[in-house]
Amino acid sequence: MVWYNINSTNRFYIILLILGNNEYNYVKISIKIK
Image (cartoon, rainbow, N blue to C red; front, side):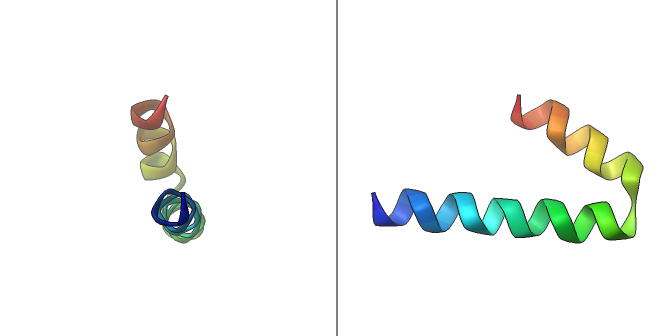
């Protein structure tokens, strides 16, 4: 449970980071996660 929560948080911050840098990459990653 703890590891899963940390993984989800890291993924969330990585998405925010990429969204700030490049919206196109954010769209690609969001599609990959789905």
